[in-house]
Amino acid sequence: MFPANRAQPPRTDSRLTMKTPPSPSTVSSTISDVERDTGVAKETLRVWERRYEFPQPLRDPNGERVYPVEQVQKLRLVKRLIDLGFRPGKVIRHSTDELQALAEQTSGRSSASVPAPELQLYLELCKTHQMEALRRKLSQAQMTMGLKRFVIDLVAPLTTLVGEAWASGMLAVFEEHLYTESLAIVLRSAIFAIPQADSNTAAPRILLTTLPQERHALGLLMAEALAAAEGAHCISLGVQTPLLDIVEAARVQHADVVALSFSASMNSRQALDGLAELHTRLGEGIELWVGGACAALSRRKPPFARVLGLDSIGGAIEAWRQRQTQAQAQAVGQRA
Image (cartoon, rainbow, N blue to C red; front, side):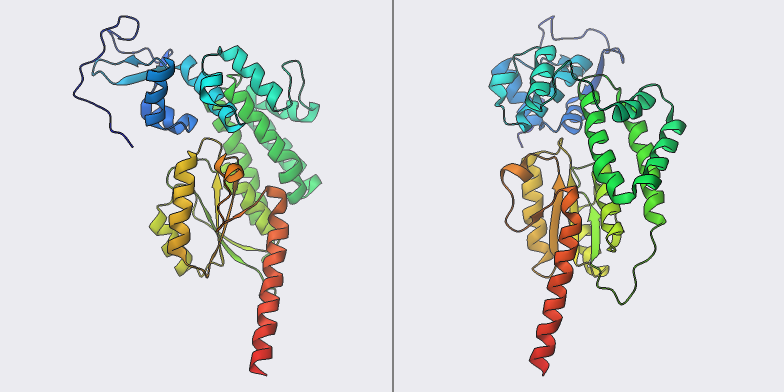
């Protein structure tokens, strides 16, 4: 990572320099904030600034970059299109509206399309801040559908819809957080209500967490719900666990599997580098399962990790059980 050159004086171009502190309503993000928000690395932001003249950050009184809200919103869309396969130079000079239309077209949604009525109702409850009503409706759906169908058929597409609404500016950050927390309450309650697996039943011990750079927890919680519904013994560390602590926790907890979640905002290079180091430190005795919307998982699947979608978690656990049964049969045969 290239360090910022702090020896250079602040730029004096009146278009880019602020004489007074930024207004919270127009400028809210430092370069570190933007990196965390969009998944675009700091050095990449600086390269784009020089090469494409976007983004065009302002400068605070100390000469540090600060990014207006509209530029952060456009960066979200640029990152989303890059994840869909576009090159930065092909999209970065488009307007925000043009980028939004391109993203909708590419993902199979036109600007005139209307989400499924049921999903739209959940989104409206979130946009109007009716969080108690949202939690009740989610809880009722979970009871009616069952946990697995609830996660795969409702929660997954609804979360994608909420993410699209956030990226396009239809939802504020705090509204997306309210949705996340409401859904987390429902999912944790459902997980807690699952009966403990019979001690005589083969069940993998799955340690769930994210790497230090990944702060999004919802994908991890959805995976935990599905694994628990399949009878797995789940140990969740939450998000942003230091790599060495993941290794130590896996050892202490006698984990059979370490499961990691990566959101679309996760930097691909950091994801692959972290997975490679974690694989080396875990050794061959512990399986590594990964999932999420990070582009690295679909473009360059790491050979040492099993990449899973939400709907394939059940099959992965069943395959693990079969391998255990085969291993036990072989051990008995060798002793005989």
